Image: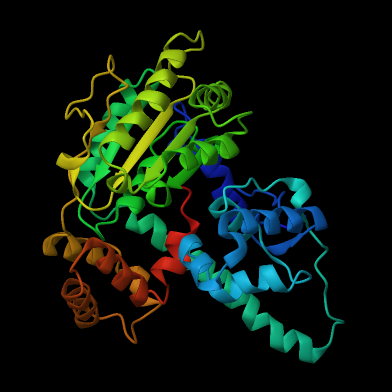
Length: 402
């Protein structure tokens, strides 16, 4: 039996969000790897899965057809990857890629939609061993560095919002709505995914994000998409609420609505009054323990137009008013002193990736460059990733759950 430290990380993620879990009391000597990585390149669409995908493309784009660039922009996936999925049916891709494409088209990726073909191996030879080993080692190293960087980035800024949210999560009984707001490029989506780690049972949660941008001219299409997402028998708000309620009875539910600034006013009020408020009433009448499964709604404002949203908000959490979203503190720029503190405390991330020698001057050069590129928090995050030989959009952002 082989042992793999990655499995230790997976086990930790399963238990870390449990309210009674205490890491200091746990000692793990060795853990057998029991499951393959979910997003390894081993997924090939079945005939039925490919037909579902093609039908969804026709529904979404009609007779004009789709453009690879448009799909790449909507899914934040690489164009070559999308082209491979659509035009090379025998080539495997990752489960995560299929899930992103299906999610963008508002269809559910089911087990019957793909196969996991056995991994083929070339005959053992000196040539094969020489050519493949470095590649495998590099892939493993890149993944390890990516995880290390993501964990480290969760300690950079956003302290006020994270502190307020953590306090609210302790008081929620059991539902709450939150407004994440700031100017464009201030890392709203990164923040909401950081907050996800503070939610009890987050690893088993039903998480879904939906961009409201494409629904800004017709809210009916939003109800239709929500009906597909939650398996509602119709696109009526009542049936959708009932389906979300059914999901919540067995697991934590987190729904993230992006670009609420695009549907502000009447449409956003309608969404709150016909979706969130009826759902709150159903949850409050439930007999399950109040702390069993949180039900959370995140509203993401990417333009910093809180005053123009046209919905009631509260600045202090009130457990008796879970139907009214709580506005967390507006996201502010990264301060220079915060960047300096973070880079110095995480200098080991840059030592192995970007520096020729581990000297104080090199760290100062990195810090200065990140500060110079700190026009917005996202640009600072992009700069940090580049110094770690990683890409913010491809290595970090595309893997976010919300």
